[in-house]
Length: 296
Image (spheres, rainbow, N blue to C red):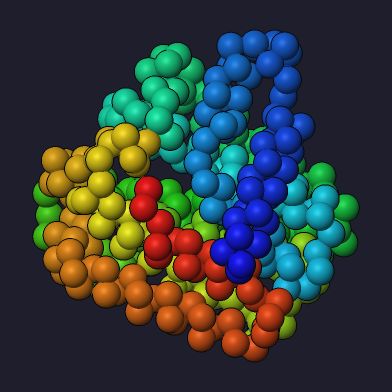
């Protein structure tokens, strides 16, 4: 029964997210038409929308306004989509498949893909800045998203990842890389959702940080496990690419069984971090389950 309820909630957010993203993107009929078409192609009809789900689940802790959550979720999803567009380009990970579709530089061209990423990044901050919250919280949310996206967040993690190809990393170094590359946007999703409801106490921020850290690492551990065990059709992207590119992963360092055990430990850590929020954190706990138990 709980799984059905969660599944229905998740589907409703995913559907709402598609509508919100169309609303917040420039229309495809507006010039430059090809760039706007490619932006829609990159963002719409794809992915599990984990980050928007986290925004909405965290917003439920403090009864945040639905319109403000949709805005925050769209902003963080556009940052995520831009990162994928750039990540797939030949100068980065050079991949031809994303979410079961040709990557943007394959469907269009490299110059267009570069501009799509740039434009989506700018669009994200415009969306978030147009919210109706008080100025203090609005500015805090903009600052958090900027930091999570930059050299001390996602971009920094990607830089470390590219510099680590062919190297042997310690478990601590691998964790640092993924805390930035994957974890930063997951953390900011949780914080943006919570801030859409109220200003946060230090204790609330600490608890949400502990939760975000646990699920952020779990997300990457499971990604590495799936990359080693699932096929491309299941994943919607090229399977086995990390091993083929000689990239350090949790599986290459810990092995498959220990990596799976680590993901379960991190799920338990996420649960503990949410204890003070009681039943209002139910969706966040269910998302921790989704992240660890997913098959794609």
